[in-house]
Image 1 (cartoon, rainbow, N blue to C red):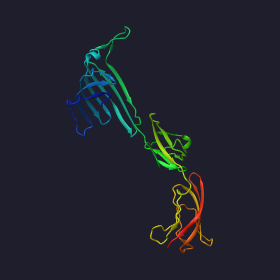
Image 2 (image 1 turned 120 degrees about the vertical axis):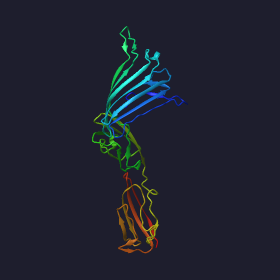
Image 3 (image 1 turned 45 degrees about the horizontal axis):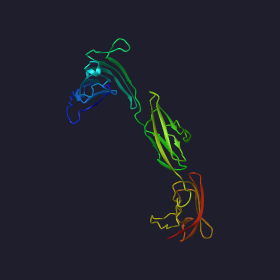
Image 4 (image 1 turned 90 degrees about the horizontal axis):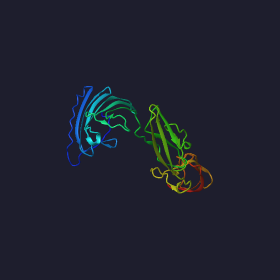
Length: 318
């Protein structure tokens, strides 16, 4: 397991990279690997150590299934850029453990060693310093991403959506914004009923590590036209049992309440409902009505609390 992050690039148009790996049997808790390569340059943390010249690099790694690992890695250097040092050798070791899907720890020790033992000149007359350095590296997990889910990406004004994320756990703290549009901004799955297009933001904090991730979700809100033609009222229907147009039924996407009354030509109430999904099947007191023209009175309340009233005729065809 290599702890040092490097930027290296292969020689363009030339296949000079060679590698060899030796692995222990899969049944063994031990694993070994080795590698060697010729690279177009050695660049580490934005610093060029090879003067844009080729660098010969290689390493040997050991890992144990318990999480312990160790290795050695070496690279050629350009002497003039590295105070006369022509070789770098890195020794490293550490321990890695994955506790949960979202929590792991990697603690390692890295020693940079320069066999030429050339020193860095001291500043302001100070003593020369060894080029060798030692680093202790502790890596705690950070969220790589989060996705905000919503029960709908778009809705009509007055509808309710539920938000959520792909990150869940008792160790996570949620804060949703805009908080004033949510029933509980600290819930992992809050509800909202926005009145305009809204971008929701959630900040998720891992209480074990302090790591945070931020994600967004845009929800589009459509205006409601609480009127015809968005509320479709049939002018005729044929309740003959053929499965086509057998029921007088309103069609609209954003009704909250209705009150529908249908009368015959003598003023008798033949049908009434307050159920949005219930229609008239062309019967009265359990008997089929004769083909005729009937009068309806309709009052609706839409999801945004707009109200609409209309009356008209519907023809029963048999």
